[in-house]
Length: 226
Image: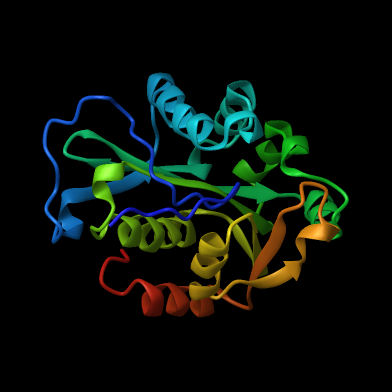
């Protein structure tokens, strides 16, 4: 099965991280094969950005901006490791109330988000969060990797991030497949594409408490959530 869900913020369009593939996982690859956590090297960061660049071309954020986000808020990038290699990644970044308000009103776009805006959230809690790209190795499509990435990613974020409740998670989507993915996790339409400067639909997930979000993650990804 080839996954083709591609969005600007939620990418399920797997791209090859390396040209050579030593082995391929079986269709019934299990969660224990994967390990997800924060932390990567600059070399690995470049690999992850290259996937985003290949998927989006000129629409991709620059490497300097990606690096800026990561240096300012390292825990926002969660890397999925598989057989001592990178299998994929997911980004969960804090937003200031001011930036979130402007994004929600369609007054700004992703390119205006800077690492400087995130630095204070190393210590302070954030009410608004932003899901960036989800990427997977193409040979991991059809396995539980995407469930591990989403399930354990959300669980890791809940257990480690400074989240102020009630909270809201925001994501943009450009494709029907991406919208379907967001809806399956409980996101709802917040702004239609024509109301956004990038022409991408804005989705939101609201949660009144940590327990509510934990229950949601368990229901959607119970087989692999940490």
